[in-house]
Length: 344
Ligand SMILES: Cc1cc2nc3c(=O)[nH]c(=O)nc-3n(C[C@H](O)[C@H](O)[C@H](O)COP(=O)(O)OP(=O)(O)OC[C@H]3O[C@@H](n4cnc5c(N)ncnc54)[C@H](O)[C@@H]3O)c2cc1C
Image (cartoon, rainbow, N blue to C red; front, side):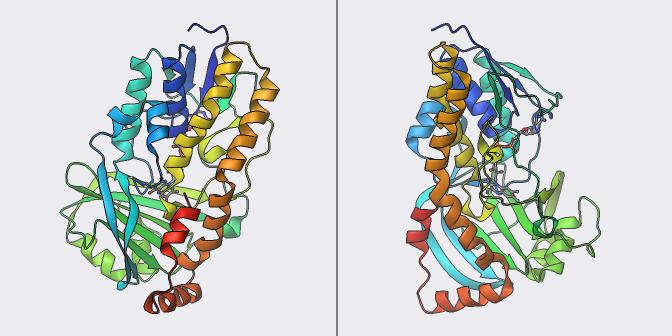
């Protein structure tokens, strides 16, 4: 199929590149404009839950995920003390963003897509045929601003396939990725008193949030310096952007990272946008209608999980609510299985 109308995607992350790939394979002319370059490390827990076979097939992701780890066992700890062990209803896929984003970029260009890296586009300009997949929106409320930190460690032994550590206004996930590395990624409420360099800031935050035992474990292993990354100004405004533009992935709405579902949402939003964009590219629909239709479908698909995640999030990072969580875990009343289904 050859289409008359080309599509321009701003942002070459998971949503932008996977959409670009699927559109290219359907014969649409696509340009992705990306501010950064590949490969690059990204602040991300690097495990994805809830990514179904239909989305993988529709977007042609199977070859890119073929060697991803499949993890089911999770241990939850509060300031180093075991809270609960959980078996996920379906395996989480584990792969570094360094590898995944670069593979997607390569697949997109191999499919004939036009990828312009090092190109930051003014997000105010939204002509017809332009899709925004520029990642998270910055936190609007300064008091609710979070810091994401990550590093890869070699030789770190895990006590479960995935470890999840809760601290004071913080939580940290440990996930094995490729090449014998473990990704250590945390979300921390910004603390003005913590000052440290790029390679030491995560450990400094672990100490500041009561996660000293984890900090000590990192002190005994090799840290991969190039992987040390930070992202500030993270907010979790679960209201979808109402802008009259086509927003996908985190630009549409960002789910708290404990769910391990943000990457799945990025891919799923590309899947949702695919048919309306194909119809537009073939001249069968107007742009305003395409944007409205896609926005409505995204809201319906993600509403329940966004509301659930926003409700659960404070129980993971706030110490008083963590105590409630611990009580529920000791009494065997943690509703993890129903929550998993509400969150995916
Ligand atoms: C601390 C933390 C941990 C997380 N852990 C997990 C996890 O374990 N599992 C999970 O599933 N999700 C996790 N997430 C969420 C996940 O990373 C995101 O949901 C996912 O990356 C969203 O993909 P995206 O394509 O929407 O955006 P991104 O992957 O962020 O891509 C957006 C792209 O747009 C580019 N861009 C931005 N502005 C412009 C511009 N003006 N012009 C051109 N290009 C631009 C950026 O450079 C970037 O490459 C985590 C998030 C955080 C903050």
